[in-house]
Image 1 (cartoon, rainbow, N blue to C red):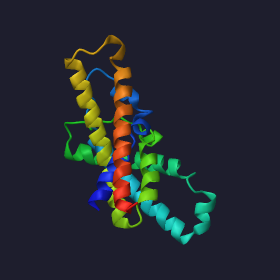
Image 2 (cartoon, one colour; image 1 turned 120 degrees about the horizontal axis):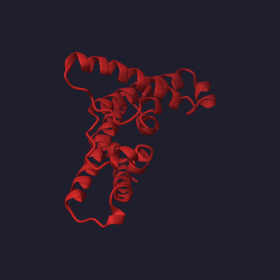
Image 3 (cartoon, rainbow, N blue to C red; image 1 turned 30 degrees about the vertical axis):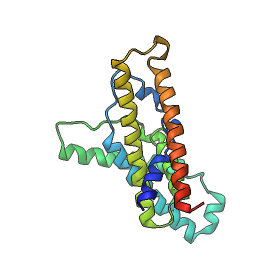
Image 4 (cartoon, rainbow, N blue to C red; image 1 turned 180 degrees about the vertical axis):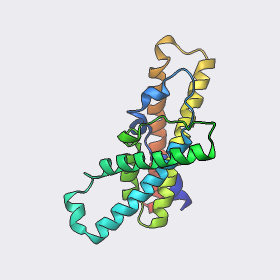
Length: 195
């Protein structure tokens, strides 16, 4: 289970993950970590895995005709509903603060929820595995954002050539981190499956 959690969080390819949301990460100051949205991502992916797995098991014809077609609309609806519920709970618990929101729930968190659901559907076989994988994907998102924030902080204190400042440095960093995360995930998946 520990290897599954580590490999699932590493499998979250940074280029795909931030391909649509790169505008939030190229600002001058570090982006705050969206803990509320990471929690909504975890719950929505776990809930949708349960719904789709149950539906595919009970109605096999459903997977033939609809397959992945319904993933995006369901991800968008569930993320929006859960985020609205989480906002109300947040305001009841912490009335003086506002939660950080970097991604739009209508776009399924810029495709992050959709990719997480697809990966969870392929990796997880049991309810517990789905829990571990969806939690690891949400933690992997926060971890990769933390790494990119640190790269941006370091770049602001070091001398960086003018043509690399801002978006180019963010894209190069994401590309290199993507290669590192993808190769690490491949090694861990091979260790898991014994190939």
